[in-house]
Image (spheres, rainbow, N blue to C red):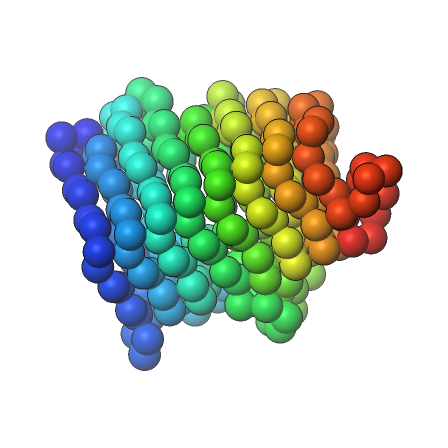
Length: 219
């Protein structure tokens, strides 16, 4: 239930040598601040450094701030709204680093299932892996209503670089996610921002060139 309060600060969680599906899993309100979470991996492209679970939970508010999140098997920060009620997550001032080139599937931040996210002033990089099983690619930030409607994300002031896709919005043509992205540095990615259907308000970002996004390579 949402009364399961968890606040962590100034800790190091290292899963090296173990199979770990979730490094930190929130069922209620709480925070993770000024900590290091690393080596959270599980077979078959799994391993969630920090996650908001959806089983048997009501609304909650979570803060993820000023952490280093390194070497995660699937997602750095994952959020889902819960069974009932809204889940609002602020992801601020973190450094989230993927595993780079290889047979990996790293999404730095994933927002889905009706969650509400504020993603600001983070350094997101090195999400370059490609799954050998189905060709899926790694993403800096992904926002989707695939599991439930109502997913929203405000993305501002982030440095998003060296990823296959900086920001991906939507899962298919029926997706209705709401995303605004302003004042970000979105550079050195194969694709800056992509969408399967939703219109993305992505004005006033830096794309690596004064002419704006190229629509392709190295946005």
